[in-house]
Image 1 (cartoon, protein in one colour):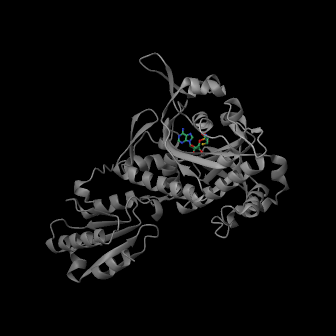
Image 2: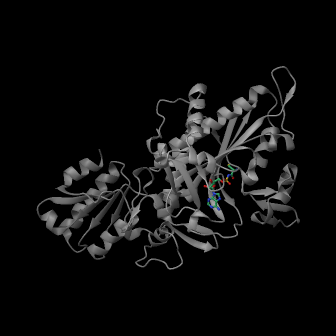
Image 3: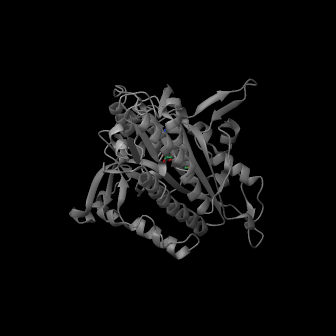
Amino acid sequence: MRWSRAFLPVLKESPADAQIVSHKLMLRAGLVRQTAAGIYAWLPLGFRVLKKIEQIVREEQDRAGAQEMLMPTLQSADLWRESGRYEAYGPEMLRIRDRHDREMLYGPTNEEMITVLFRDEVKSYRDLPRTLYHIQWKFRDEVRPRFGVMRGREFLMKDAYSFDLDEAAARQSYYTQMLAYLRTFQRMGIRAVPMKAASGPIGGDLSHEFIVLAPTGESEVFYDAAYEEFDWNQAGLNYGDETGLQGLFDRVNSTYAATDETHDVAKWEVLPEGNRRTGRGIEVGHIFYFGDKYSKAMGLKVSGRDGTPVTPMMGSYGVGVSRLVGAIIEASHDDAGIVWPEAVAPWQVGIVTMRADDGASVAAADSLYTELIRAGVEVLYDDRDERGGVKLGSMDLIGLPWQVVVGPRGIASGTVELKRRSTGEREELSLESALARLTE
Ligand code: 5CA
């Protein structure tokens, strides 16, 4: 992408209405714009990051054996009357009437819809276990939408739903998602600690939140320093390995970590003082096991192995896809701007020409741009007719992992400067070496 042709509105000043650093940076770097309270348009830069995050979530869900589908954003009120949640959900639910005066709502979550879709198709224990997911916009009429996309009213969520024959199998589905979550967040360059949680309006008695540690987080958190040594990849563990998954769960469960909602002072005080870590965190995922809460209320039954009807046991598993954009920035930025982890960066490389009126360096930058595109590298080329210093500032602000600075002085001796955004390391090297390095 050539910056001169791009819609990348970066702001010089920090917007006064944003309180936390990620929200400020998302506005300054032109990722989003608010269109109504808690509702955001995703501009091209933000959209690219959102898609990268979504794709990592998708790949890890698929790897864990979940199947993707897509359910609508609008739902009928009757669906929610079946579970009894229509009244219970309260003012957070956006209720709408269509032209026939039918009561509708903008879905805040999809337990009801998936239970009915599944109920109407499955008959036998052979149809279990199944885990289905979708990545879709949700609406919750939050009392206090704030911090930009972190607590929006409209937000993008991955929600998965598991159906199993009995509790033991359902717990395996829960552990499977737990492992998928560790891998998902690790791939995005962040660590999200699983913490015991309250299940709130979703229901059930087994629930974990995945919390990214950041000083601006909404929840206060308490955890064992053992998490600093935790094996986040669990590379040796395979899906389907029941004992291994149980072991992972037991390990998580026996390592203290809780938010202020579930904090247990007695258990906390058993920890050696030097191991007690406190801080704040952002909830980027939340998983629930709620047994037959929805399947029973909504009449989902299959015939069991011996022919008697069985009510499947369910869980649901959410990832805050749009919230993650903010959470990753909270965890990865510096005074100059965003520092994208490579896996979610909108482009991998940014090229900057220092003098738009210098034919030789512009020609060199043009050819580097063409070569990188040919090699399949995602590159943003700042070819604007702006002062070099301004362009370097914008490049730091938008935080691409690699910058190539092309100026008349370097080009006279055949070199460009390669800068790594995360460390600030710079290196002078020939155009050819820069190209080789970036296409490695
Ligand atoms: N049905 C369950 C799991 S699929 C569910 O809705 N869980 S949830 O309420 O915890 O939401 C899942 C995730 O969505 C949260 O962990 C959080 O990361 C994200 N989320 C929730 N509310 C908002 C919001 N107002 N703005 C941005 N993200 C949100």
